[in-house]
Image (spheres, helix red, strand yellow):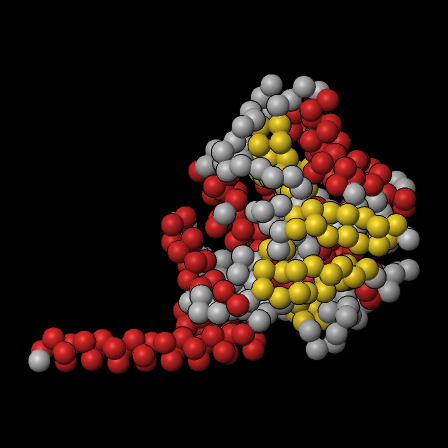
Length: 381
């Protein structure tokens, strides 16, 4: 009798937990389109991805948060560009977990890194590998770029999976997407995350798979968020969307610092690459002459005082771009970090861009060469 009673109590408890998880999963799915372990087997969906004026049709795997492996194509200027997503969900040829070269480099980033609008040989990670191989370096550059993904996503991808590939170097080329996605919504306390790799990875696993934990953790974050005072700046796209100044003063730095600390523990060098936008090079050069605090003040007052000769959209992206690039400079003297600045070279010619942010094949070569020049001294032959 006691055994039956214990069994019934456990069964009742399990039913309650499942009901709670189903309820939490429903709320999270409505709010974020995020699915729990209960629904992941049924969660593969087709998704349109828009990169400025171009639309790419990809199959997005909500389970792995990557593009579904396979062959895809995209029409650009009347020509069909083909691209392959390998079995691990990244662009390019297959690669193994085991490192078979002296130098393994992982390139993190968004649409410019993955380069869906470019042939594989025209992407900057492939150009970087070609350049280094010509100089007799035993190297592979893995393209871990994914479209419309930000620095927060890169952090999660690195802690959950990418570190397992034991890279010697990681490259982070992420400026616009953090502003677009990470600076909106809940602010994160500077000392909120515990500096423990296992705790961080456990937290990420639970956030991905158990929606009750995700919901409670997000509610906790929202309460903490109320204690953080921050000015806001209006989005250049929607007046009801606001970006937290706190992200630009504290949070972007904190996320980079967390990645850098984790990399040092794993004997991995971090290469931070400044991103170039093309609006009005002389005006942008003037902004770069201001220090970080001065640019923050410009950002705070941007809606009242647009930058001369630039509309609000161009002003917003010009200033936020400079702020995040200058934040990288805080790590210039870090023994485990290399900061690469290709901006002046890229802004010399508008033909280096396909729009104000995405690079042309020529721009990708310039970017690859700038990175190559900076990292050769730490590579093994």
